[in-house]
Amino acid sequence: MDIKYGNILSAEDYCILRKSVKFYDIPIEQVQRALDKSDYIITASVDGTPVGMARFISDGTQILIMDVIVHPDYQGSGIGRGLMERIREYIESTDYDRMLVNLLTDGSKIGFYEKLGYNKAEGMRLWLKHP
Image (cartoon, rainbow, N blue to C red; front, side, top):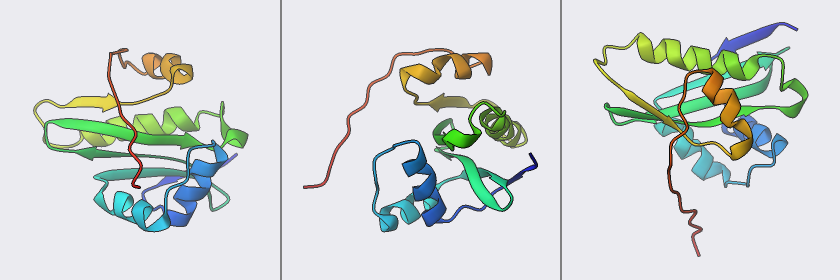
């Protein structure tokens, strides 16, 4: 399998990847705004089709990694690790003196992130839906 990594992701492909892992739907306009405001996007493609992605936003002192997605047909093939390694390489190539990197995950992926050096931490979240 020839995996190509890049930095371009359409809102449509983002929605397809989200749907493949049963994430909730987001209106395409809202998706485009989120992608436009991302500080960094990394994608993994096979035969020109996006099969994985991750992105982050930053305020200059902290980074929040979000939407680490690998299509179920490609999970276990090293794509998730490849995405996360490329994010780390990008962050380390910047001129930040110190950066706190955060991410949210469901309980099933904690072991994956711990193998990459992340520490389990407590956090809180609230999902809001516009009326």
